[in-house]
Image 1 (tube, rainbow, N blue to C red):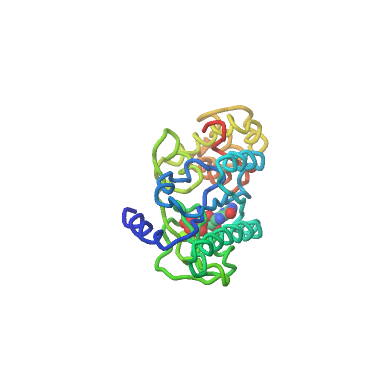
Image 2 (image 1 turned 90 degrees about the vertical axis):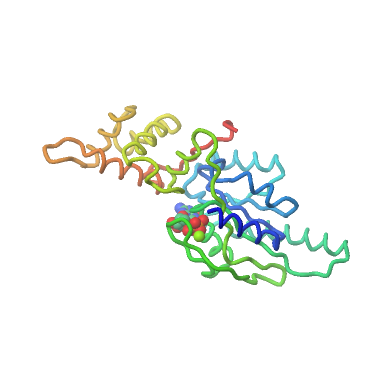
Amino acid sequence: MAKAMREMKEDIGLIDLVIEVVDARIPASSRNPELDRLAAGKSRLLIFNKTDLSDDRENERWLKYFADQGIVTVKMNSKTGLGVKDVNKAVDAACAKKIERDRKRGIKERPVRAMVVGIPNVGKSAFINSFAGKSVAKAANKPGVTRGKQWVRLSKKLELMDTPGVMWPKFEGKDVGLHLAMTGAVNDMILPVEEMALNIADLMQEIYPGRLDEKYGCGELKGYECLEAVSKRLGCLKRGGDPDTEKGAAALIKDFRTGALGKITIERVEQR
Ligand SMILES: Nc1nc2c(ncn2[C@@H]2O[C@H](COP(=O)(O)OP(=O)(O)O)[C@@H](O)[C@H]2O)c(=O)[nH]1
Ligand SMILES: [Mg+2]
């Protein structure tokens, strides 16, 4: 990761426009504030990705929060490409500004060079695929799959570095690691499966009361009792009939991550 960071520092020197991808479910933990320093003086665009999984109401609140800071933010679902028109508009606007600035300073017109950056698993590769409209990057559900470096010419005005810049998340603050693990951004093994599920169950009961009950009939139970009820409801039982909470935990985690428990935003504007 130190190597990835060093490479990105080098690459960013060549770049006019930095397109930062974040996970809309965890807009705080999926950003690395280090980027502000690395990308100082560059045009910036924030892609609010995985909005198919995040809470619409919270999306709007975050977008306002970023807009208030002068950060242009666009909602995106990189799996389906929904949002790519808005991305194009925002990129065109950023390019026009840059070209105008160059023209005023008497610099000969050249394409704007853009690079996509973000922490592992936020959907950088999937985003590049949607945005560039062809498979220039390989999407995979594993951190760090992408290698190599090339420019993709997207228009007369825009060139995109085909490989994204990888930033490591900043593990500061009490819940950053937990939230990254909950969404699957970092390795599952950070926490044992059952412990992870307990964290998810308690969080859901707190921030989306009623959702777990709707899906699993577990009422307002929390902690291990909740996990037992979920496991029973899902038919995850051991020989002898006791709930198999490890199986139940895996199922709960999967439902949480895939949207089966509804759209979820873990991190809220008011906690900023
Ligand atoms: N639901 C959903 N999944 C996404 C979205 N964007 C990416 N993914 C998934 O997230 C995982 C990581 O994506 P990838 O592009 O490889 O992330 P990268 O490590 O940042 O390049 C893959 O399983 C993608 O299919 C999105 O907008 N919505
Ligand atoms: Mg990738």
